[in-house]
Length: 427
Image (tube, rainbow, N blue to C red):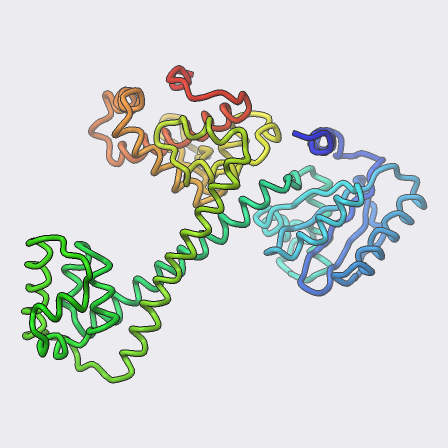
């Protein structure tokens, strides 16, 4: 952690301790929008100084905000200023980054907290920009806010590419679903049964000869040459000949001429997406090698390049977390339960799912692999199941618990910069 980040984190921790009832702070709550932002100015003792300041999302607007905040701070005899933002898409990032570069203290009010606190301002659910700014300021006064992370360049690079890869993977999945559930299901449903054997062959059929009547008009050898350029033996030939025979009696709909255009577009689009995903994955791996913690993450059973990259991007600087519970909250793997009117024995805790969903998914996959292929993790997982084998869903629950354990281990290794040791499973 560099010196600036260490100072910001320590200032945030001190702020959380002293904000309630403090007479030193000017509180600026900001409702973020795309073109214009609304700001509310008040004190931690509940005094309203300026209900509404509208400023543009540009340098002049940011200067207007800072000048008004400084003027009010001096007029009221206050020593510190804190700016509270509600994260709204990516619209808050230019303002937040500008304030941090100007050495201002910035915090975040989560969208969930803002929504729940809105009614408490005047007993009504009434949403408007001015009220939302006051709502953010009210949460900051209560200390119900989060640290505004401003990571170093390589962490931001990694997060950008991880987000891009996830976006591309979603597009890839949409195209796959369209090909199988729209084109194949409608015009050549018999092809879907053989899809899992070789996707490349199936895509070639969709691209060049989806119409069963066209396939039936070809000789078997000609059909095979059209959809594949590699001879993988008798099993491949038997499979393709089976498809050729099924085309003769296919129950698919009549294929319009325009479908050939759609087939070309979606198949070529899918191929391009695969190439782009490969390029992004390679770039992600290059960036990961710039982290000295990366080899230590790879030493954890079940952690490959994909999981390690996700953990690196999510945690960033491991020293910004005080303890393991904060790391679990970040991923949404912390336990919560409704215990009102219940005893501890009857209340069933579940993971909160308030954090990063994709990170949870990747950690679960890592836990699944480790609990099947690594001896230490197999023993740990088996011990957790002893006496509870008959409980419904217990295997999944224990793997989720193992995923949380893996995240804490990963965070510990990043802090200590040391490889995995099976002894961590006993802690």
